[in-house]
Image (cartoon, rainbow, N blue to C red; front, side, top):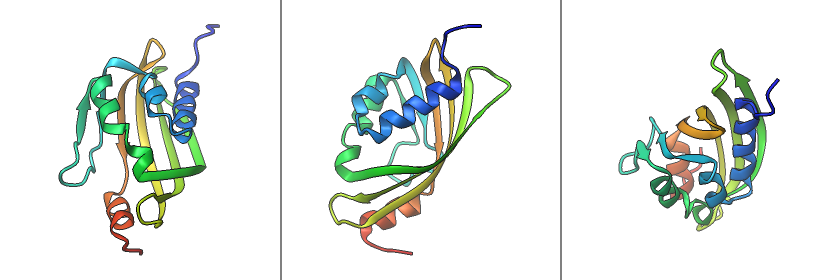
Length: 138
């Protein structure tokens, strides 16, 4: 049995690091050639980011926009591929600029190589994000 953390363990660590609001530490969990994909990104936001540096540049200001205070639900699933894990998770927090609540659910598919994230694909509802920023509540 290997002492290498499983994809499930690595994905859980990435969520813990995200909750700690340390975007540098989060991107340090990624390979230099990481590809992040956001298929439902709103217009004007990137749907694909390539490279750890570019991903850090994209994420560095996130805690200044959204204050994620908790991850109330998380389920992480192993797959037949030992390098891939899937997470269903949600966050609760608020928008820093206007105080609006920010509650989002995600489905994330993550591929690891040598213990680092090489592909991160995240599905989420851009309307929830845009409405929270605009002050429109459902």
